[in-house]
Structures are given as C-alpha cells and as structure tokens.
Image (tube, rainbow, N blue to C red):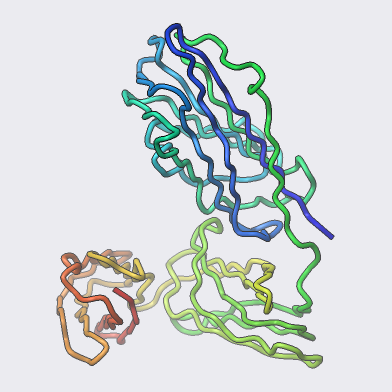
Length: 362
C-alpha cells in the first residue's frame, strides 16, 4: 500500500517593461521518506530563481519592484520561518486562517527586501527550506489532504509573464503504508525522585531495531533522550525501561519512536508527566555537537552554586567555572570553545545535591 502527500507548487512568471523576466519556484523536496501520520516532522524545500536578467526588489509596498511570496500549509504546522539563500530575500510573517484543529491553515508570507536577485541560471539557484514541520493530528495519507501551496506575486512594474508557465506543478511524496510489525502493549512514565522512569511493553516484534525515547516541553518540538535496542524478533512479552534524568519544571511530554531494520518508524502515544523539581536538575546541555558555545539550563528549588568542568576524552581538565544559579530556571553559557580540538569531551556539573555528567562532541 502506498501513501501519498501532495506538495502543491504554483510557479509565477512575469515580464518587465524592459526585459522579459522569468521567476521560477520549483524542485520541491520533502524528507524524511517515509513520513509518519500524525506526529512526524518534515523538511520541505524549494528552489527559487530568475532565469533572465538579475532583478532589484524593493521593500516599499508602493514600489513597482515590491513583491510577495507565500506558502500555505494544510495539516502541517511550520514552527519557524524558512531558512536558506532564497528565504533571505524576504521578511517573513506567520498567520493563520482563523480555523481550528485540522481545519487550521498556516501561512508564511515573505515580503521583498531591498535586494537584487542574481542572474540564474547560469548563476546558482536560491534555496528556501522549512524544517521540523509537524504533521498535525487528523492528517491522512490521502492525496490533496496534506499540502503546501506556494505563490509568487508579480512586481507591479511587470506584466504577466509566459502564461504557458503559469500553472500548478504537483509533486507526489510517497510513503510505505501500514504499521510496523511491533505490537506495543503500553507506554507510560512515573516519577522517581527527581527523575522520570519511562516504561513500555511489547507483546511481539518482527524485524524491530531500536526505540528512541523522545522528550518535549511543549509537545511540538522533540529531542531524543535515549535509545534502547529492540528484540529484533520476538513472540513473547518484552519489558523496556529508560530513565529521564533531567525533567523540567511543569509538564514533560514523552513518546516512543519505534524503528525497524529498514529504517521505517512509527510513534507511540504521548505521555505527559507534570513535574515539580526538588533540589537541582540539569534540563539540557546543548548544542551537541558544539562549536564555540555550550548552554546549560538548570532547574533548582533554591539559590545554589554549580561547579562546571570540561575535560577531554583522556580525563584532562580543560575548563572550570563556578556559576551562581537562582531558584527556578537558570542558564549558564560557556563561550570561546572554538579553540578546542575536534573530539569527545565530558561536561560535569556538580552541586551540593549531586553530580551530572554529559558526553559531547566538538
């Protein structure tokens, strides 16, 4: 069985009073393939370029060189503005149609800056990319159910361009159908002192590879907090457990990403644990890999001093910092780390309560 996501692109072409201009929005790409309904996230990208002479845009809505580019998402919720060289040509604002649930349509509208779009081709094309776009609840693998509609408006100085090219281009996104051959009996979480124990059971597994336990503090943006190898093939009940050592104050959300040997995956139900921090806890240490900075988010039920130490993979201490943290949530930033050689490093955060250790890559 095949499942289809439909990506709707509308290419707009126009012609100036001096030189025929051909603006193109094409080459759509959507990853990963396959996706997950619902709860999966997608990366959606486009190429955007001018095929004739370079063109100077304006950010003045009254100018003849002003234009807009819009992307409307049905049953997809892009959390942030697009990135890429093409996105940099516009200033972006997100709106919605006022609907609710699966009827809610999100639109990112870009208005032109005072920039010149270079000749392309033969120059390089501009890239426009939306990342971590969630497939919302209620989405189905039906053609035209999930779509992205792109529309470029002509600058006022330009008449309509090559009308033969003013048409919708449909790109089909294909995903393999059916659930993974893993029968999940349960997935739940329980508080254990300042930690959360995540437990799940399967009654049978076929070609299963591993489980990723994912965490979110808003049920929208997810990160993996640990991986547990699956049984592979099993016809008996299997019990699994993973501990989240650094829950945050408030509601903590968890889900299982169940992956098979072919890299296909499905998500479990979402578990919500309302947590009040006792003592000190490390919410996050990121980014990983890091380049020049590390940010450590700490939750504490009182004012405290934390000793933060960075050591290399041979145990040699590279950096030591004593940081004052406040009751509630605090952030500590470690700067000027670009001088470190690429490799494995260990970060240790020690308080009067306990010691937390993390392995990071530079």
